[in-house]
Length: 220
Image (tube, one colour):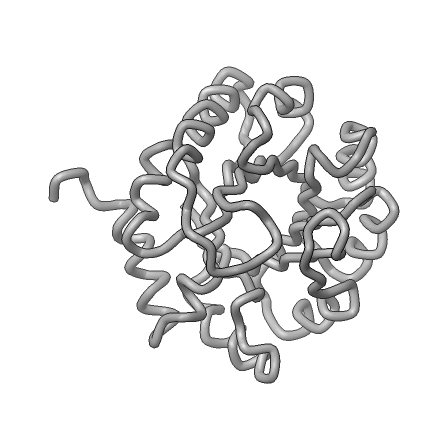
């Protein structure tokens, strides 16, 4: 399993320092890109992705919460993204966007919102490297985990296993030390955590504890 701390909750005034504090413990850096249209908030663009790329050796897990992502995937690829995830709800031509990401030499992910049924993934799951289940409504950090997301995680895990190819199953929203085990047991293997990591006193110890919780046998 992997931890992908979201810099949405980091201190941007000292972002390079924040990245150094997670580098020996995390597996990815999660970058939330919001446009003020697909979601109400506005965050960052390719220039910040470039800066993050220069500041860490960790792969960049870039989550485009933007309308018509096909207009911008090339810019984010050039900026240094390693994984680019787009929302199924944000484009009319999902397969075309996924293929364009892969043609740019990047791993392609697809995300779905809490109210979106997993059935929208049936015709695309064979083409992606990652599926991202939103366990909060996207747009703001610090929200609570939606419990019904566990059923969606389990359903998508079954889809991945039926597909018979390696696809990472990521969950994003409200992931903390005290609930990560539930999401892991449901089938997720990549965990985005913003305030759960950057709101902690010791980032490294928190990430380590998250991994330990997942690996612990139930009831021990």
